[in-house]
Length: 299
Image (cartoon, rainbow, N blue to C red; front, top):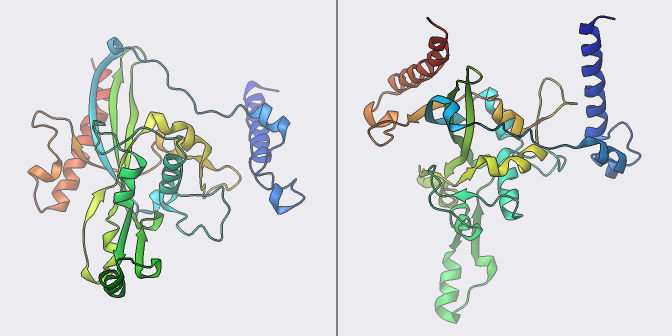
């Protein structure tokens, strides 16, 4: 047997074990056993995020920080958006937004900030002001004026959910590792973007108040994202973790800002009211970054 056949057989066995241990559908005797692993499987699994290798500052020959927009209307980005209706689907399938919010509420994700520079930390109470909007009806106002209290039935409560997220914004750094002689990318933060919860209370007003809800320090959320799986449309027996999906850049994004001498001025700040030229500028920045690695090997 050749070395190639040995490697292929090994990969096939590993994939079979992974599929067997992943959902336990084929061995479940009751629906409650689906998704549960035995003690032997848990001991054998050793399932953790792939750690980043140490990068010495002296090995970074060149770097550039970029901010990008992931448009959830694009088909290739659907795994980050769906499912938005979780009533009739298994608990193991959640959208990226639901995974992050649940991790924040459970205290597993602590590094949450108000901006992409990670200077102002936010708490769960701070996030509630952005994610939830409460409104008192006219009957509730009349009751308050007359009695000084308001029944809960007269209070409308609107909460942002996964279906309200329109795009994701990410911040990362491209750098040239001179020791390995290759261009690498490291994701630093990600942010859900949506209209404020107030827009759901007054849909007829056509309020366009798209805001950055919060920024999550990505390295601190990798454990949570690794345990959450995104849908793999090509092979449902091998779901992809959100950590793997984001680290491998299995999405399409448009650069809207890069670090520059003008205080990290965004593309829209110097190309106004021209979406086509803004897109071309984004592609120019991408091409400039790709050429860095190509130019490294030109003599």
